Length: 231
Image (cartoon, rainbow, N blue to C red; front, side):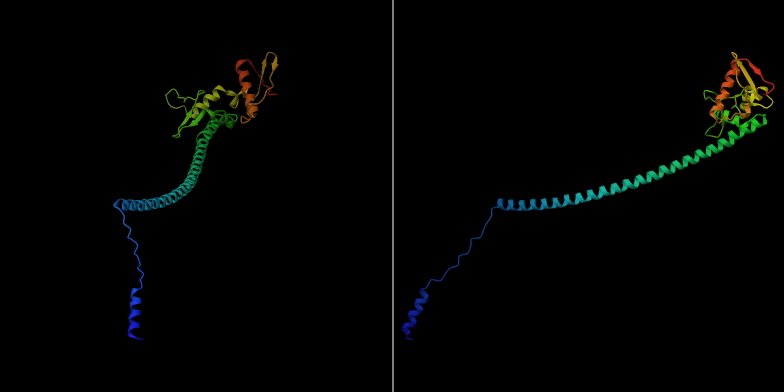
């Protein structure tokens, strides 16, 4: 190749345009725009964090409710056990009081009535025990018909002995050897009541108590004819 041709080729290559790559202009922000971007990101993070807190609080509330329900069940069971135990103790106390009452009152009345020659001491117990009570400090108290505590002439509590004697004196037909206690008949306006034995009555039966009440009513309000033949 001649020197002239080389020169022409080089000149041609040099004259060809070389492509230029343009750079994108850098984006710039104002201070206000930067502040808004930062503010938006902060609010987004705050919202996300608050949502997490709300979800956790909801879980905690559910756990608390479950615990409260479980505690309530446990508390109810404990209260029921306590009530049952208290009821058992109350029943034991009632039984003990009943035993003490029977020992100190019923048995005492029966013993005194026997010593005072009552026809049927158990009947005396049945007739009198409703008017005798045991106080909280285990004192024996005799009551009147108005449930007032009775006292003797000395100003002391009326004793069982005094009460039984008073009862038998007022109701001699309950004592052995009493004619009216053996058998009697009343004549009221031409009507004759069939005689019966007081000792045969069972004061635990309502009909026998009714017979005795009627007998006393007629005996106390009308003249009584004594039946010495006991027929």
